[in-house]
Image (cartoon, rainbow, N blue to C red; front, side, top):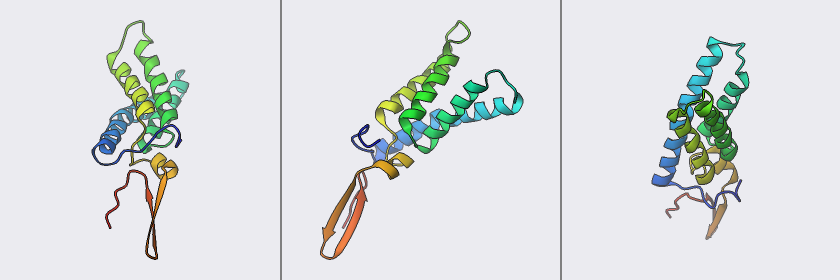
Length: 137
């Protein structure tokens, strides 16, 4: 995961990525859960499972490229399935693709697990910092 993203942005860019993950993840989780409760034996169970898995991964920022790909596949399918084009699903698919390219940001599970660490030694104190975190002596 560390090789996919050069850094995990903090501050305003990290906040923007967090908001982007929330905006794309929450509605899909709600829609999938509502559909599963309404029709538990639905023929489109695989679509609901893909949507729920992808958006859940995006919400917490874990395996962001996988979550974004699942999100893009599920929403892209919904955008073109009835012969017409549904713009709302396609926008969600494009945001999923954008998150694959941009990464999850500093406030994610990926950043906690895979971010580079910087070790600073001052006197007898050793501090370990994650990349993207600010150090103020």
